[in-house]
Image (cartoon, rainbow, N blue to C red; front, side):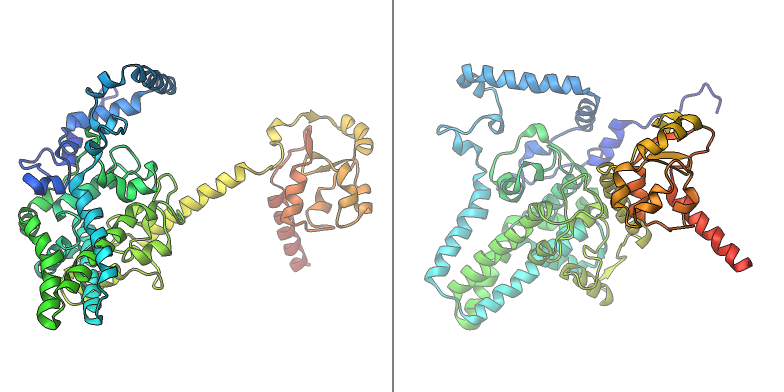
Length: 507
């Protein structure tokens, strides 16, 4: 390649088309009819690669001044909108309109409201009227475990992240019991989750944690989303999966069967508790699973530590892991999403990891993916270094040697005794206010005033502590001309001690 030739730049639109899967023949995400309404608003996923690229360019090309102007324009627009609110409201999408007594019902996703709020509320009311029997509670717990793990091990780590490969029987198990969790089809759920990872903590994130705990936990599902925040992710692998295709096509029937009919009939036929099976094995079991999964979107972005990356909201916390089948080590997960594990330590609660591992030992799961320990340690080290650097900037380390004035020997000698100056490693320090505080006594310091005390400070009299070196650095006032100053007194002392040890051995 000659120097005049330009390197070809990757086509952003083409790459966005690949990442969004819109270059495929069958890009549809949601089903038709009521199933489509259940699994998401069509307008939120109807977007082209060109539009995604333009959104990115627009967001990244604005200067701070332009952004400030836009913010001011928005404020001005809000004032103007108050004047002609009624007229403008008809031009805005419902998600952009303020909630009023006349339009509040338009903001609500009523189907999700029924499935997530109304039906569980009815179940809780009936639980107070109808105490459960032990067998029904055991059934509810078993179905809770099956459906919960179907979401975490199946929907999430299996299909959404391809962290391992499932055998066909395992796929059917997870697809059926996952439908009973009433969280949408694999196809819809995994697509939304891939969008979440692609656009974490942005307006395109379906459950953007920046908008508050309740928004990421529930509100995003219960309100009509803004189609301006539409986004896509490639799910061509899911579209080609016959199990996913079957579950998506027949999702509503599978939902009713697995969420309500199976627990009701099981409890009724085997011990005559049809109503208990419906309430506890059906409604309340589903309610608990839903809330547990929602905690991954909310609690896991709210409490805990960020050992791998603090630029975004995901966090690690044992409490979140406890209520989410092990999905609580979320900072790790967002950093290493295709790792089949969430918890790295053996004592950390992650039943999903254990389930996948056991399935692999039974020959029902294969190619369990993990990031290397080196990559994990690199991420942890980089975050620790970042925190240390941040701490370092908040501490006083003394004036940089390059910024100190240069004195000749005559000036140093003239001012030394009067101002309390000592020369150490070519740097002049004002120790006057510290003389009385010196742990080794005043006499040692006073006897060194106006002199080069480098050798004495670095080990010939005292081998000073780190704290002493740090204190000394904050006393710098100047450097002595032609003295070869060295601001790293730690290294100078260590070299002196090493040389002295060698000398003692030789003698």
